[in-house]
Image 1 (cartoon, rainbow, N blue to C red):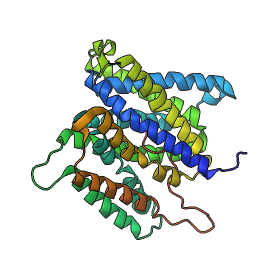
Image 2: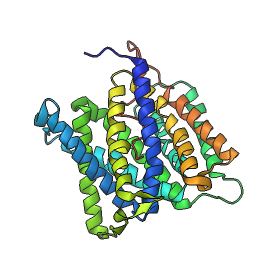
Image 3: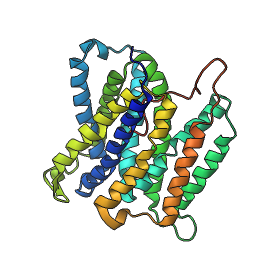
Image 4: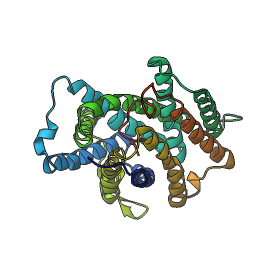
Length: 323
């Protein structure tokens, strides 16, 4: 049994956050090349499924880890459709119409939905700072969207970001049950497999689409190389880092430390993509309020008698995203 090393866990979460943050900008470059959100979601899912399938077969105990019972299928399908298909697709739609940092901030309202579910759905006791966190986050989102005067954000992009938050919250809740039954590698393998099947079915219904952009470049980088990052360093590596961090930190701590992602993503996008990704002072202030609000909400639940830590719904990691 591995002895918990909190410092190592924090480093792993920060590393995953940095990879996810860069992935936001890389994904936007792929989208700008002409690959649409459903296509990118499908390619990401197929690539990650292939890599994780190979890991599942090579690592002990080998193929046995992939065994599935009939009772597990609905959970695996629901988990894959929410967190690995709908969340990233809606996120890709959001960042195709909004700055990367703003798209992530809308998605990062998901922990608030989980906290509210814990309070009203599961009737867990909470500290009063839950309401302070909710209020701060709502004010922060209002600042990000600049609700005063004429709205400056794309309406469909905002709806996509909020939709990603809703499905991300469902992903958290389904993940709480998934990690009780399976190891992280096999859970993510089947989840990406379900996402890949959903992506293929979507293409059958909506049409094959134009795949010629895969042979193009975006800002001088081949799209295929960018997709390689999305799969390997934007999906597989950060998921495994988060899984490793969960051995050293409680899930709540992983989620809170992972909130560096929107900050890093905004900075990377600002540097790499230029003025179109710049945030004004009101939006920067709003982003800070959202992060503080989420931290307050995530730490508001009270530990049941006899437990050392709060007992939120366990998660496989912070915003997956999607990013």
